[in-house]
Image (cartoon, rainbow, N blue to C red; front, top):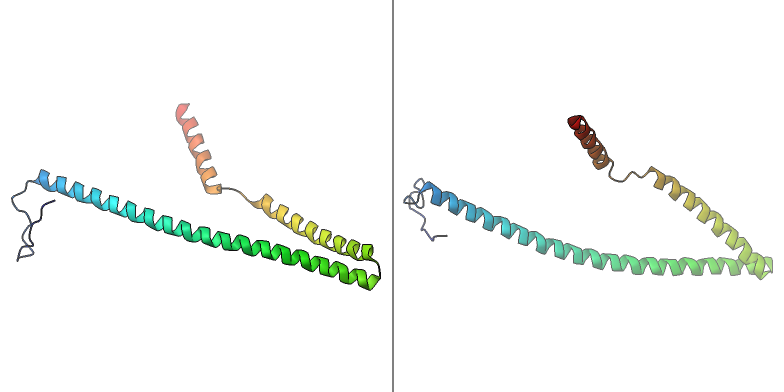
Length: 140
């Protein structure tokens, strides 16, 4: 790239002595440099976002582990409270186990129903099927 000074008249070309081929070549080089710069910027931004997402995922994982242990301790507390109320340890834990099992069954059934409704990439699948049908028509 040349270091042409800005003319005093903005309506005049920067480098009037260059041919069209030279100007197109310069335009191509400048465009390539611009694209390279944009790609480098996108890489830096993506790396920063991935690092931020990784930190967030670690915090979510730690929070989920703490919540799991809190729920487990709550279930044991309920079981011991029922055991004390029934004056029987095994009966308190049995009632707690049955309640937790029913809740788990309801959640699993709801999750299974929702999972059956999931259609991964429906638009992409439809487009591919249309492309296959088009290719078959072209082949016949």
